[in-house]
Length: 176
Image (tube, rainbow, N blue to C red; front, side, top):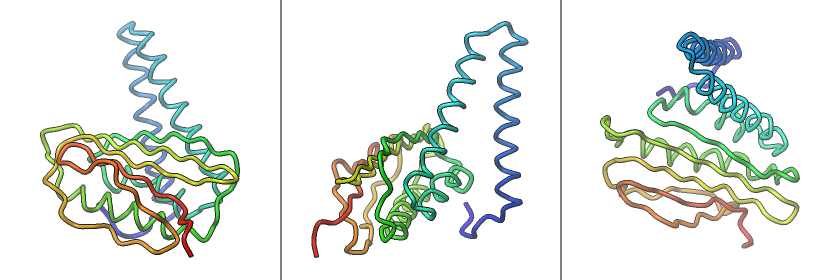
């Protein structure tokens, strides 16, 4: 885990490394005559890249950068990002959303079981009238005692918080 921002050079290096890994996985499946598996890897990678392109529609550069680089900083998670983005978001929310995500993943990352797969699913809904980011982790970790601090711009709603599943929503606050 690293707390410093990535330089453009570092980000490109990580992206190329990930891309090369995907190509090697495809080649291995083709060499083993597992064409359906190779196609599945291509489909998965294509879906992942499309999800990252969708993030640009949010107009939340800090949040988008965090989402696109978090798997390099917190390698213990298998990440899936999905979205339904129909409009841009309130840019004033950007730092608050990023900070909540950073706190949550940092709390979890320090407590992860090394013997269990850890999944992180993030779904973003952004329409003219609603912003909702759902954060869901499934895996195994020590119970989380700390609460997440956040600014009044966003509201956190916890749906589940156990030692194997944590699901909460970040929404634009309707107060104030």
